[in-house]
Structures are given as C-alpha cells and as structure tokens.
Image (cartoon, rainbow, N blue to C red):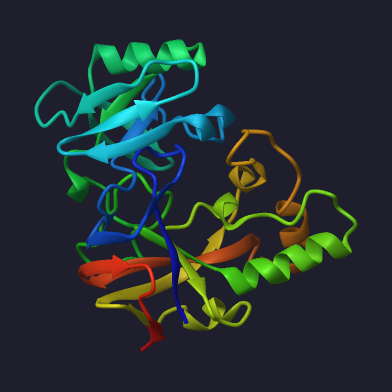
Length: 269
C-alpha cells in the first residue's frame, strides 16, 4: 500500500491543490483549511451553501494565499497575523478568525453575489477535536471533524461498481468527490474499516485512526463544474449505512509529525 495522491484545500470548500509532499502539523497538513469563507453572521460558507466554491482556486505562498476564479482578477492575500478578529461558527465550534481585509471580502462578495468575508485561523489551538473522542490537546483547523482524511482507491472502485449496478448514469465518480488529503493505492476495498482505533504509519508520519467519515451532500457535487447529482449518497445509503452514517474514507489524527510524500508506504501498526 502506498500514497498515490496528496491534496490540500487552503480555503475550506475551495478547489483541491495537488501536492508532491506535505508537512504534517498537529492540526493537519500545512496549507490545509486554515482559511474560511463566512457570511455576515460568521457562519461558515462551504460547498454545502455555495456549490460554486468548486471553482475557487487558492494557492498558498510565502505568508499568504492567492485567489483565482474565472471572471475575476487574481488576488493575493497576506496572512493577517494581526488585525480585527470576528466570531466564526463551524458546526458546533464557536471561535474567532482574523479578517483577511476589505479587499478580500469585496472580491469574494462580488464573485458570489452575496456578502462574504475571508478569515484566517491564527490560533489552531482554539478548536479541540470532539470532546470524549479526542485525546487531550488534540486540535484541528477548519476541517470538518478531524485534521486529516484518507481515502482508498480500491474502496472507490467498489463503490463505482455499486453505482453502475444500480443503473445510475452518474458514475464512475473520481476520488476528488470525497475531498481527501491522502489517497491510498494498492489496498483492498474497505480495509480502512479495520484500522479504526489503531495507528497507521505513512512514510515517516504516524497517525491515530479515529473513525470512518460520514458523508454529506458535498460528495454529490462535481468538483470541476459545481453541478449536483444524487451519487454517491444513494449507493452509500444502500451499502454503507453504518451507525446511521454513510461511510466512505477515514479520519486520521497526527501522532508523530513529519513530511508526507507521494509514494510513501502505508503500514498499519
């Protein structure tokens, strides 16, 4: 088993960025989901609310991020290390984000036709992983539930077989529908289910395997066009409804830090 692809998403909900290597911090991969789009109330705005975020390309650079979107001029935003903070709400998390500034807010608001703000999570320690599930001191950035997500290409093949057998014309789906950080190749389908509660070594990095990922409507969104369909949720509902969650891929928590690289071996411990 080995790492086939590595992805980061600098702004939560934005287009993926393919990486050859990635530094792992306690809160996730460097360059992954430290930025967040919010509305005027401070609520997170993701592809659940605006499917068109699939077109937003955000690339991190020295001390900031560059925003690109068809029909808009590129904009480079510096990390707001100091500045006014505003309330942010991501699911049950209520914290503070540092505003990127008026120019970034105007750029996003113009692009999507509604008032939006861009914020930076300066303090990654303010968002603990779910109490009662995490170990003391485990935190994450603006990811959904845990710092890192791993998806298995063999499990995707099995899922696409189910979609084809159902008669749906929506498949085969690409792995980017599930917005993982680490994509695993050379494994058997659903082997990731057997790792829950254990540890996984990926190259020089060791992760605690937390649990499977319950999937939402974002997986029905074409990551190139923003169009929504019905799959994979219909097929996951028939075949992977486990504990009232439609499971695909698995959550990881960094245990020993280091650098991930495409081609790294993956070994359960």
